Length: 255
Image (cartoon, rainbow, N blue to C red; front, side, top):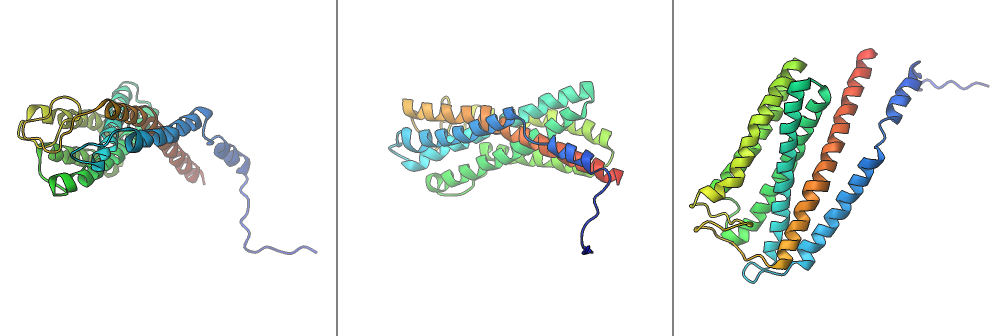
């Protein structure tokens, strides 16, 4: 005897095609390996920062935040640089894949920049006795974040795909000037209180510390991991997600 199933969903005729599309969305081996390297590298860098590196005599364990603070900023700068390169290539080739990569670079760069701001605030509270001060370096970093947040707003405000991709590419290229300015401002503004981890700190800097060999090793490992493994892995995953969203939109349009 047949028992009806009134709440069952009918299977569309093009189910094999959709199934093939989903099956092709599995992560490639290289991406999985890169993700494993990113996770493993994060654990290794955490060991170097929290265990291997010596404790600063003045700041104590609070100084260890700087390894994550500097490394996340470096990774964010790499992500924003990817946006610049992808934007230039898109303007020359008009291939959507490059626009997709540029978008991923901005989103990952923004996430890492927010980590930079948060870790900086956590460090500043016991060292500067405040969560935030309108120091030139901090202000420039905040402006950088706002500029790239405006990039996402620009993309969301334009309905024409070609116009959106073109203007976003130009904007992403020009926005990188804020990254450069944030990096060099502590070297051109003597009144900043933000210390320079690499090189000489400004005269008014507060919270500087002498880098020992173990500290340099910890900072080098952290920067390498964030720039070469974590950032590329996050960008790759974001590109894949954007491609899946576009595929879903195309399938919906066919229904």
